[in-house]
Length: 294
Length: 346
Image 1 (cartoon, rainbow over the protein chains, first blue to last red):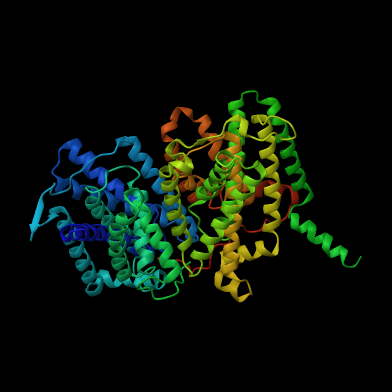
Image 2 (cartoon, rainbow over the protein chains, first blue to last red):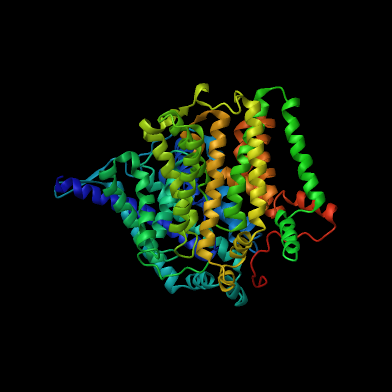
């Protein structure tokens, strides 16, 4: 294996890892604030890409940037409406009911996609097409560099907002305890809806970067969602730095694992990683130990 | 004699039913026995058999999800292990039917135990994630390992390979009775477990794990048993599925199918055993009446789950609670107590 090939695998794995990181961050965000495992996460991601690429870009000929922004806005709206109508009423119910509700949402989304856009897979070349960057004789897809940059930028902005602004402080307070936050005068439902919508928008952005590599297909959500969960488990459940690290670890292991087991079983690598982590170090790489929420 | 009296009382409470309720069950089963004489179209009979097979699977899933509160998103894996296991053993190794069925169910049970053990070493929703991952792996393996599973085309069992039961050819009418007997037996077994010490431990773990462990319940072992029961029922359901359709293909064992099982127990009421039979019949038979809107069925299913969660959090099982209230004139126990939470502050 030449050095160039290794570098290419490394870069594409890092680009994938960044995408998984965004998905995993959304899942952790929802888990910490709304206190639910969002099993519709991958399907919402798929919905966002379908809206941007198949509906607005192909259907109406919008420029790619405009259609992406529009689809992210629609995703945020879906998140807010779902949070205000369903999660709000299920708040007194056990987590199980809310989890089943997210799965119901996922089922509706997948079948709505099939009904609206058909079961045929679509190809999408990404924001920058097949343009390559040549660095020291090694060709790297410009799209991967863009994905890596956007992910890093989003993480930075998110970290700063969470740490230094009032909104960030409120979200952290809600993650600690929604009840106490409510007693302190925070309009809890509004902020929970906002957090849910934000997490979904993160997934939507991730979707725009993952689709150029895989095909756009209505089953995309299953695989992506579960890799997000894998990243969360690998990093340590509920930990935000863990989710970031876990996303990159899953991306790298997938890149390397595919070399070993072949591309048929690409999607199985993350599952094997979950099992290995749960056997060897159940609290994850950066986990704080026992999780008390369930 | 002094020892026997409490024991008799305990047996009665083990069945967990009053006389009226038990009579209602007997009447239902008797009606079920007569159904093949009324329905002459094999297709409709097959739909009913499929609904009963799904009832068995949903019963098991309800033990893990509704009764113990362990979210299992991979019930289709256990069903698939049962179906594929018995198909491969009888077809490729020409093993005797009973032995292959036993092995297949055992394999499903061991898989359940392993998943339960791996996932419950740490408190958290790990089981949901590992079962979801298992489901994807199962689908990948079933579609790619053509030498073993026949790939996407699946395995078809010819008539020759199906055993004769008491010398009778196993056509759909005979299979109907086999599945009916299995369903009744497994339902009664489920009731026994539900009202036994283990069943109380299940419910204690669901309602509050910390309190349960303080009361001396071994929570890890209890959760693992819930997984084993769940996968055992799933494996038996898979064997019955193969008996009914004589055909397995990977597309029947996807994450979507697992979710349909979850939909059955949600519609029937989480933690309500007879409700999950109702839910399984609902999810299996209603699409047959809704042929007009076939493409929209999964959207309807998803929406009805959301509606039921919002309007009747206890599921359609409340119908049975209402009926039993009529019969025994007694407060029905709360099926799902929910957890203690501070009052809402907004």
